[in-house]
Length: 66
Image (cartoon, rainbow, N blue to C red; front, side, top):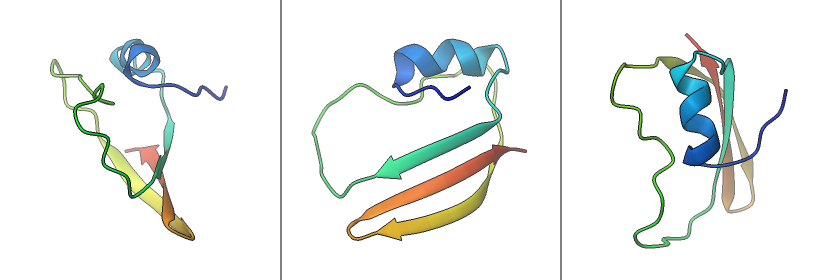
């Protein structure tokens, strides 16, 4: 299943161990005070970096559950 979204969607999935991969795309833009992507504080979730790709000024990071 592929889910696009931020913390509102991601938090319950991470809390229930339903995430195997995280694909994060990063753009070099500072937005100031926004909504945090990760707010899980109850338990440490470990993912390992699988790959990094560069698309011009953008970066794509792929993490796998570790």
